[in-house]
Structures are given as structure tokens and as C-alpha cells.
Length: 338
Image (cartoon, rainbow, N blue to C red; front, side):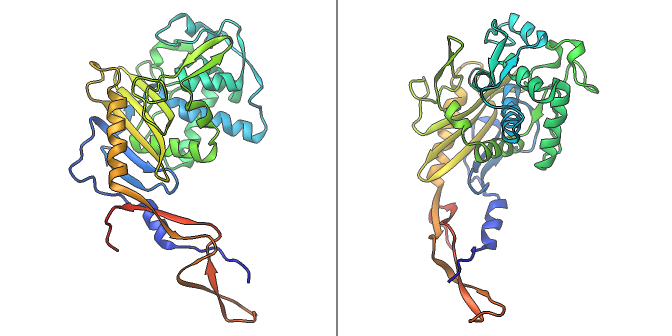
């Protein structure tokens, strides 16, 4: 019997639904927790307010780099020449903390520097390689966000730096020196989910606490990784960020109990007094979500759901049993009543 895809409207509804947060209150201005597989929102707090996110911007930049690789425009081993613009930023360690003295590096190494060490110069170099200039790359960033339905974000550069440190000649047309990239927790959850689902190889980079970069050792800014101060088993990404205006933030992801969870915390409380505040808050956040939600198998591969069937035209039978082409799962609260 020919196997048929099992289409369940209930799953679509689950994906779009929002779940109440009870009395749990995360220590951040904005927050979002999402099941990566389904996109189901598990928690949100002031999630639609755009905030200056700093180098969390790099998640979108790296997505577009992977997309360019996917198109065949370049490869992970393609060499990138570092422009004077990108290189000159390395003279200020507060702007770009990875020296680029060789002025020529592979795409894959610049991706690692961008994600692990928030290297603004490496990020700008990648943008220039993909689009020819950072300004043209910003156009690509804006178009991608529009494609994903993100309409209220502000994007003025590839790295998340303040426009004022880039130099007047490098400011995106129509923006001013005080502008910064602004995204909401909801927006960032979309970007992070698309990056993980479309290019899961990114986790091979973000799961590493250290990495070799042209003879130097890069150390991840994510302290939740193994051998780091705020280690939590299962965490394998994703990106830190900070801004004078938007505070200290973190996008985390963890695989635990059969669920890939994405958490977003923007402008974390007490980060000025505790360098690990965003990681401590994220760990508490993750614990709460896993205490509240579980992954339930709705139907196994090859099995039917609730006597599902499909009509057949000009067949030996009027209808056949519709079976799942793969295992289908949903995320629901513990003790959830049907």
C-alpha cells in the first residue's frame, strides 16, 4: 500500500500558539523560549520590543554567509582578504578583539571568530566578501528579515557595533551616527531557529569552548560550555551580545530530553555586577522550561493517527489508511489535559 503523508492541522496550531508563563519571571527585560523543531513558543516576556543587541547580530550575518556557501558563491575554505576598513577596527580592542595581522583568512575561520569571540572585524570581512560591501550586505540582511516576517527591526551594519565607531564614510545610507541594530527577543528567536534548522553545522563551532585561529586560541564568550565557569550539560550554543544601550544579552540552545530548546534573554538583570549573570539566568530559564514541558510522540513512523484515512480516485479501494512518513511529536505541558 502506498504510504501517505499524515497532515495534522493540530500541529500547525501548536506551532503558532503561545503558552502562559504562570508566575515565573525571568531576570531580564525581554525573554523568549522556543522549541526549535516546531517553533512553538514556550515562554515570552516583553518579547516584541526591539532592543540594541550588539554582536547577537552576527547570527544573521553568519546565516547569510552559510546561504552564500549553499548557493556555491564561496566555500568554507575560500580565502577572504581583510579590507583596510575591517583591519583598522582591530586597533581598538574594545571594538574588535581578534587581531587580523595576516590580512587573509578562510571563511570558516572568520565564522568561528565572529561567533565565538564576537570579532567585529571578522564579521565585517565576511559581509564584504559575500556582498562586495557592508552597505550591500545590510540590504541582504534587511531583505532576509522581511522574508521571515520581521518588520520592526533596525539593521544598520553587519556587526551590531554603534555607527559612531565605524567612521562616517561607513555608515549605512539613511542612518545616523547614534543608530545601532535593534531586534526583539521574538525576532532573534526566529533568526536563531532558522540558523540551527537550515545550517546545523553551526553548532559544531558554537559548542567549542576554544578553537585555533591562525595559531591563536579563540575562547568562546559562552560560559555555559564544558570547562567554562557556568557550564551546563547539553548547551552547545549560541551567541552572546552586549550594548551600552541594550545591556548584556545571550541566545542559548540546549538539547535535552528529546527537545532542542532556544532561549533568548535581552538586557539581563545585574550583569554589571556579575559577569555570569546572563548564563545563570539562562540556566534557570532552561530548567523552568524543561520542568514545565515534555515532548510527546503523537504518532510513530508507519502508524496512523486517530483512524486517519485518505480518499482514492479510481483505485481498488475508495480510501486507504493514512500513515506517518516519520515520527511526529508535539511539545506540551506536563499533566496537560486533552
